[in-house]
Image 1 (cartoon, rainbow, N blue to C red):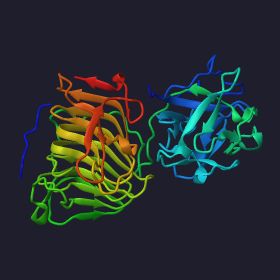
Image 2 (cartoon, rainbow, N blue to C red):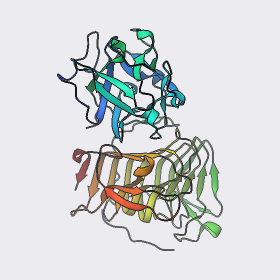
Image 3 (spheres, rainbow, N blue to C red):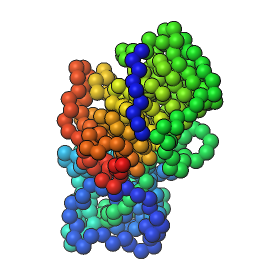
Length: 427
């Protein structure tokens, strides 16, 4: 097999200062079109915040108004669209849209998988003489409104004809929240404390397991820090596409405390939501792991561990959903994450990369297809040994369903590639 040598070694939390409002939240002195960013939307009549009911994450949940407390499900990222803004719920990554793309008054406004549809696009129109806005749906021309102009907590939000009624006006207040975190199907905290493996101290295996056919995992599989490596049909050691994985995880499965040795075939496949906890790749094969989910609500969580010697991709994302890479180290690699550039069926895909150390050489941390609405969000990234800053943080592509995708740019833009200079540290 091809063996590579190892090398050497904005958005912040909300505090309660926020919006414990029994009084109105002051807006800007003169309303102008807001800049992209994270905001709370406060109804002028009720002084309550626009929220996703129950902080739920699935599609079709109607929006409501709640007492403002700065929670992520009350926080909306305004992202420029060609005709206005997408309003993206910070806790779920889903868009505010009109149910069934209806144009009639009284139709529910709900959270939905972001598709770029006009029914998910909103214009912020300043209210004459004030600091509030009417939030107008581009598809229907109707305004975001609290049903029956209610001032009650929990009242539902819908679209209605635009007029001067106060319940159709909204103040915006800029806020900041943590990036969304999934529900991790394992014991312990969902966000572990910061961790970074030493530069050369990779774990010694407690034993070795030769694998000649894919191990299917449902529930939780604890490898006890044994090294698993391919043999027989899994022992080719090449980089050809279409190899079978060492492990195949069912929806909801957890794989932890595993070392993947060489040859590693196609690593790990996740067929739905899954968690990889403290998994180490000593020499990445075709890919370290591939997310092959079937639903936009599914998540793949890589929590802890490390990978090295990846000639191309470490983590490949083929299905819909969101991948989380946290508390991880990568050395001598091509791309840490890649949203499939030429899958026959394409989706909007999302990745959150946090508390990750990348050791040069490497090409990019994330590659995404902006034409399909992909997003990549970064925080607490440390890059080691890249004095000339050659590692690209976020590479943008024009994805396709056949042929090769085209590189179309790179760098933070606040919409698809989301990070600031303070999120990246070079050592």
